[in-house]
Image 1 (cartoon, one colour):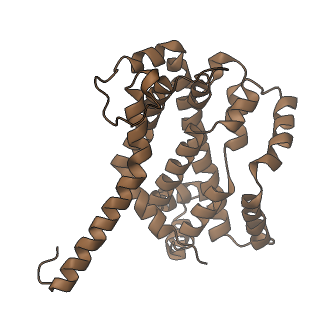
Image 2 (cartoon, one colour):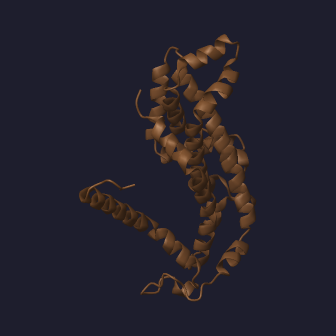
Image 3 (cartoon, one colour):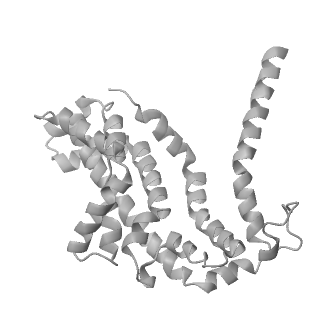
Length: 279
């Protein structure tokens, strides 16, 4: 990689490598701390000086934490909600982005700007009216209440629209000339060409939905419908928080996202790079 370069370039390369590796290790410190705490007895969690590698490791913290509350059900709920929200967000954002990128109609640009303006609204502004709507529909303590209000967002529309702007119009026109309908053109021509953006949006949506706490906390009071973040909150009792078990379940909850990014990181990075931020 660095053959044929002079001493200056070699030194610069290794300096950058050391800096990036050091910065990466600093970012991993919270994860190391979480793993360490998950394997300690509660009395040693805040013990100083800190012991990064527990001796001996308390592996039973994991099954103990899992069995203390019905986390099998919580993980099932999170999986159902995350999958459905991800699919709906990708489909709806794709349709909206395709319309804004490849169709021409009155008020198109104003509509796009209005969608982008919703990104500036904090969640606190939308929480009360959204809750009242969900309550009037009878969706409290239901999957509908967890899914429908977050099934689409402005970021997804923006991402798909920016990616689709760079698609050649000639391909779409050729499909229409050959007799393909709009849906067939979209799913057979457009979607395969924007797959990196689709996967990037799916990964972002999955992460946001899997880690979502505030909205489920507001509308869910039935224990059988709790998601993983709501389950983690139960470890925080009035007088004591069992941090070792809390970190154990947090480690387990982190695994799906880590595996997803590990196996598809190249597609994810490609989608971020190619989506573009210009007209």
